[in-house]
Image 1 (cartoon, each protein chain N blue to C red):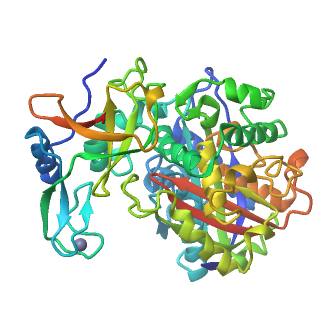
Image 2: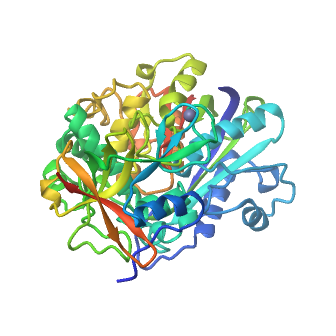
Image 3: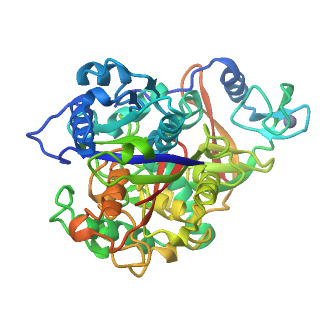
Length: 386
Length: 133
Ligand SMILES: [Zn+2]
């Protein structure tokens, strides 16, 4: 739906894989939050809404550490990597309705120095999407981790539509090129070509190592407020023209879906584009949640940037690179900047729309799309404008 | 290597796996609209009916998709030899996560005809797996 809300502050920590740096997840959330509030020209005491990322932090510890004694709106969206962008919808509604004045959305995790994703995911059924379903029907067969779940879809897409490894590789290469223009990207200074991609070891065949997102330490946060309040703040506001979220059906089980490729974004995207009154081709850039390369193909298709089955061809030929028709993940994304659970995609969109993206600035960017993807295909999308 | 995780035999999972232990692959079939379903659920998502019977599957189907888990992501599942968690679509149109046994990952093909076999993985638990026809 449409909102009359704006993103007025952004904050990021350092993003790194550094054995000499062991920040806690909470410290990363707090640092990013403090930066975002400062960027907005607000004081911490002005924050009266908090929407932490599910499972990584909580309102109580954020509020206690930042001195937020008057929290009027506290909520968490449980959609995995789709949560930050879905939270834009909730935060937008909160500030538009008057439930809160300034909503802080902190995110981030110690994904490198803390517990690594592959060590924790399947040993705790409660932490997995599908909970008892995954425990009773997936894990006993060794289907335990996200790259494996989504590889099932990628293989099927390859069989049905002829999507090729080189096309998935084009995504990985584009993200890596963008990271070379980003001083905070973990993969800056480590360029990669299609040959490197194809030579990288299989992880969850058909996924190679370089189809998979990074595990990194980092935090990112934003502040959302109403259009009226945004006018008086430090930085030019970025308007949330529309935001929407959706779930696949069923959302708690992947393989029984009648339409295997239908995800939350399939229903959310038309709602968001309709509410904003724009078409996908109007976007100057798109920050697409890139946990794995095929999920970029799938989201480009399901969001309507191209038809289903045409995503592989769409990402080739530099179309999604800076200077192309639709630059995707201008910061380098989860694949080559850092894994900041989807919030860094929102932060990058704001930088682009402020004209603050430096050497990777999309010239004249006025309209951008951000997506989130999480759990077994939950989806979210926001359409942002300067 | 830690012990392989097993399904928890409670509720509808207890019923499903009890049939497997008896060498029967049975899925829920809705008494309201006759739709087959898996994984087991309290109600039919098609018509809302809570009434169902456990109907016996033909046990035959085709390979729908698979992943070769060449990098271990769980202490109980080493990367050598790699497992290939697979999805089979049975003749009834039901899909389930499983494994195709006796077939190297490189020989798997979408559409491969398969039939169910049962593997006792503990005293209590029997997993349905499939072999090439
Ligand atoms: Zn029914």
